[in-house]
Length: 411
Image (cartoon, rainbow, N blue to C red):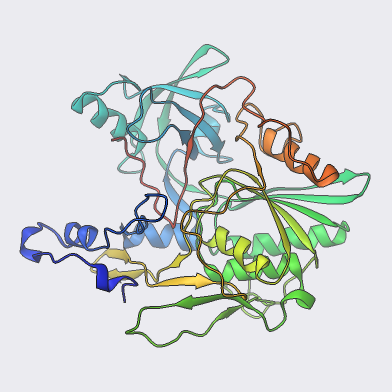
């Protein structure tokens, strides 16, 4: 099934202690034109963890999305990018922009084996109920908290708002995960947008690491409507030469019923019928989120990207469970209605703007949204990137699922 099976190394299975170790090494070593590994999305999950995430949006942790400097780069700078409502982090009073100073009694700059292990234990709790001390900084003041890990029910769709402007009504929507729970939430948000007469959309997917492609096809339909998408290919997957040609994923005008208790299969979806959409992006915008961008551009919807370059995952896998472990191996590369799918190094932003952690997402003063609204009005990118007003912590990476890989580890 592996897309690049001709590039697999010759390995001796007996040299590996576990099946997971063997699977981890069984992938191509080729690189992209920019020098990145071609297969950066080869991983496994305990099956029960994966099912909880993809079906119910449940994740073990504190409810924090972190932004941080690249792995291996000192000084390490980690900051809170998003706090899940009702999560342990929210109950502890943490906010977007809080900067991490120490974990588990260890300074974030510690490079000893024992220190890194202690930090990792705190950042990646093993089970619900595990508690660790954290010290963060806010406005120069120390902020000590104790966080207790829980199975957090994440809200994939948040903060849908209507913004008035002189040239029409603008909808704003945070969309964080293409999971089963999101299907009905997206439909509800677009129903509200349609009732409000929204004529432009700011879709905030800066931390959306992907998920179900069929949900991306539904979202793209709700943006563009039937006139632009009827009978058109949203994504055609191209497999290796051992496999049969797959049926294309068309733009979806009805719900797939990913969670039948929330939304029945065949439910007619609302749509706005827009000719253009603005999407807020970072390197955390990945997989199915990039399919939305590529799919819409394939039917000539104008897609403006504000923020950072996306992660670069035009690839598809089918999760395969076996003996308690679910395996994710790249099976295909997706292409849009025009046959384009070559974005392994990500989509470049129309306007490059830093993620402004000094303001809450959805605040019209937040750098990326402010730039998006300005570009909508003038057609001109800001003269200089809107950098964080009080946080000098760039460049950052976003620790959200990229193709659903969300383990947080220091190296």
